[in-house]
Image (tube, rainbow, N blue to C red):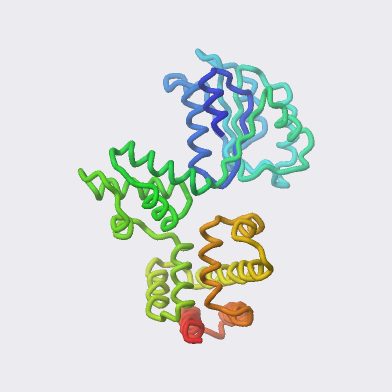
Length: 334
C-alpha cells in the first residue's frame, strides 16, 4: 500500500488506481492522499468528478474521463462503490473497460469497490498492466502493525502508551482503524495534560467491541461464573445489540472453539491452527483456553441447542431475550 505514497513522492502517478478491501480507513486515507497530490483546492471543482451508485451514468463517466484538465496537469475521476460487478452494470463495465484501455495521461481514474472480482476479462487484464494501473488491497491490518500505529497516533497527540497497553486496547476495542482512531481521541481528551495511557484508562473510557464482549461472556460460561456471564449479557442488551445477533455471535464462537479443540486434539500447534483457520493467534490461544472447559460432547450439544433456540425464536415459540437468558444459565450451570 505504501507504493501509492511512493508514486506521489516520485511524481509518478498512475492513470488508474483500484482500491478494495475491508479497512475503509486505509481506502479513504490513500484516496485522499492522491486527491491532495493531483488536484489542488482552487481547481478541484473543475478537475474532479465523483460518481457513486446513485449518480453513476456511463455517458457522464466516459465524458468525464475524456475531458482535459483546466489549469492543471491531470484531472481525477473517482468511481466510489458504483457496483461495477452487479449484473445491471454489465454494459457499464464493458464501456468503461474500452475507455480504460485508451485512457489519457491527463486523467487519473480512481475506482473503489468492496472486492476485486475475477473473470472480468478485459477489465482485469487492464488492471494487471502495472505501467498504467495500481491495485491496492486495503485489508484489515495485522495486530503488530496496528499496535505500532496506535503508539504513533498517541505520540502525535503528545501521549505515551507502551506496547502491552496498546495491545490490550486493540484486543478490547477491535481492529477497525476508524473506530481505533475515535477511541484514541477519546482517551487523549480524557487524559488532558497527563501523558501516560494506562490499562485502567482504557477500561474506564473505551467502548468494548462485541467480539470482545462475546469472549467475556463465554469465559463466564466456561468458568461456571454465572454472575460474570449474565452481567456481560445484560451489558450487550443495554448496548441495544439485537438478541439474535448475540445468539449468532455465541454460536459462531462456540463453533470456532470446537474447531480449535478438534485441531489441537489432532496434534496441530497453535501456529498451525492459526494458519488453517486464517484467524489471529491471540484468538486461537484464547479459544484453546476456553475449549478446556468443554468436552467435544458438550460443544456438540451446545451448538445443537443454539440451533433449536434460533428456530424457536423465528417461529415465535420463545421470547428471544428470555430464551437466550435461560440458555446462558443452562450452559453455565452444567
